[in-house]
Image 1: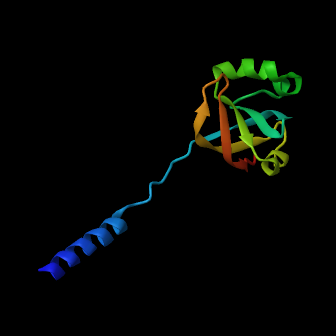
Image 2: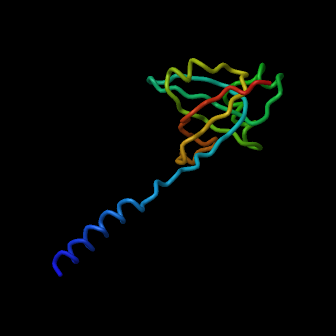
Length: 119
């Protein structure tokens, strides 16, 4: 009887451990145009707007871009130096962002992955 109980106990432990599935996180993906880049205290970030005209891009400043972002999806993204150096103002990108964000206006998000969008 002890052997049967031991077998059941071991089986429960093994099958319970094997049955747990890894949770897959669906990170949000955003697309837009890089309109502003900055480095402050070794922190790299850029501002991305969903839609912007070439005229607004050429004549804008951070305050103007934030104003334009009020009516569309706009956000600042924090990233590492390597990715920061790989993007340029005016470039269209697709950003995979962390789920968490700071609720400011525009929001602050961490960029997990950046892809250039070919036009």
